[in-house]
Length: 92
View 1 (cartoon, rainbow, N blue to C red):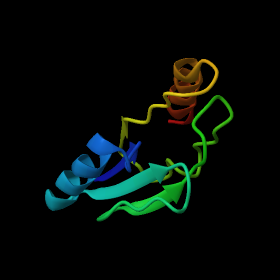
View 2 (cartoon, rainbow, N blue to C red):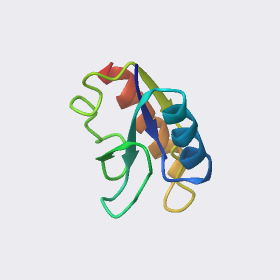
View 3 (cartoon, one colour):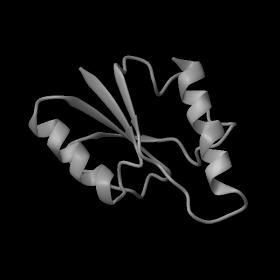
């Protein structure tokens, strides 16, 4: 089973990716920039998560999405993440 984790390089995401990998899951880590590093996961650079994020290729072959990404700065950050989460669901 392949699991995509957004926010994979955050505090919770790093531990979750390691645990999922230890349990035998194939893990993809959706990260904002290619300079991010998440152990035991295939890195997928997606940039900012907002209403313009294209998830079609990223979700190819993914069975489960765990959406942990959060932005705490900027103009209405939670609203932008809501639009990003909507795009994930729409791409499924």
